[in-house]
Image (tube, rainbow, N blue to C red; front, side):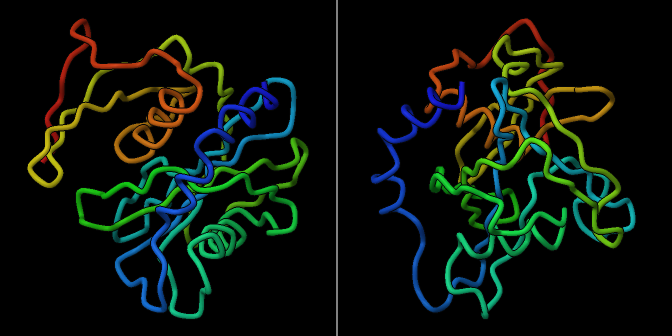
Length: 203
């Protein structure tokens, strides 16, 4: 499956690379890593944010975080934050390139980066930031096993996002949005709005 992913991603890589926010001042920007394990059936590495954090506590997320003024690029931000959060060194990530920059409900511009990591890489959650690290087989999302559809409004645009539950972890909001966009726009997985699941409006 990884060869298929790389082949399909190569068709959009240059266009996406040209859209990555640049400049000496990237305040208000962040970057996350959509990390896939290097194995025949790749898995997505996800984290559970600590209940003790002041924002997004207890939420499932992709490793990553805010741009720092010492970061030379958003790609560097994604790798630095990933290392800080889950202990994965940058030299163990084979970066394929950026995905589509998304705006959160809190008006933060976040650029996800697609990377391949060793399947047996030892990962350790930063106790100050995370309660857990877990993996989800990428193919699990193909059948759209959503538990509901969330409705949010960003920049006066209504967006519908699927929400999932995997082994007790709820995957929703921004993280579900990044995964869904990757599945639909890169892998052509037919995920869309469904009328047979409850819709929850987010404030």
